[in-house]
Length: 419
Image (cartoon, rainbow, N blue to C red):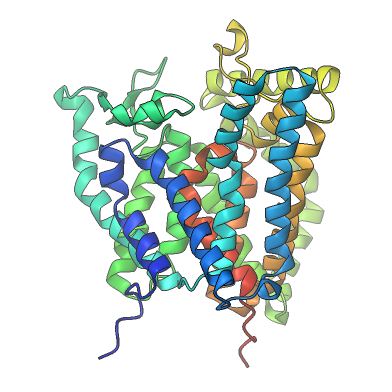
């Protein structure tokens, strides 16, 4: 009897499915930050084995995947140059190189694994839906915790000895209290609430590809609850914008799509000034929803840009630095991939990310009409692009890595369009 389509059949599928399914358990023991890089490098080893044994060929790996490998490898070289320019020393260079292996390297390794290894979207979708099921079970505990007197943080895992950006990556946190408002906010298995929103958006689009209706509803609903309870403004914007964008890209070659778009374009032309004013008001409301957060983010960006232009234009400062009291001593360039890249790795670092990201987005936009895999991958790229203006992509790669596998698989697969 044949195995179900969603049942893992290869070593790579079993590793991926079990790692995703164990998300809540790994969160409980503080192991998520470790698991992501370990999985990425194990999959890279499986890729090497497939190529070494001749079961896969280098020539079959698409150029877009090589663009990711080149871009993320360039990040390491740029890092070394930045360290040399500022004489940061051998110890700091080694530490930063290890950080690269746990961050930027994963953004190259996971798409490579998706392109080379036999990993089906159905397996990833079912595993994510299982996480959504456990989310339903656990959410009542999270919601009740601040009202029944449970502590905000249960514990910080001793696994933090392996090193990381901060203790929050190894902490089991039930909730946080929003400064100023005094209301609870939830981050679930992410290091902070907006990151939980990002993972929720990624998971919703992948879970939507689950073929079994019951599992699909559980998966989508579970992560929709995470998106809502994280109170992430960007997560709601992403869901509102990306879904129709992918829908339109999938039907861009149909006359009916342009027919429906015509009145919209006409309205934009007639009421362009009013729409711009409305957009400005919405952006103002978006920022004022958390005025202190928006103020700090804006200040971090200004500091990053000023110091990048005046101190380290081409290769950056090499390391992250904490800002002044004005920004609550937060790292300069944090909460924004492009500001962070310009400050730490200069213009060359920003280009190293922009080129493969833009290339991948263009390819998947063109292929979106070919099938569900390509549409899902396009959604993943749009999520990365949107969140690059609100998060540091490399620091969260250990959480959203299933999206990178889907992107790699879509880049390597070129199905013929249906008649």
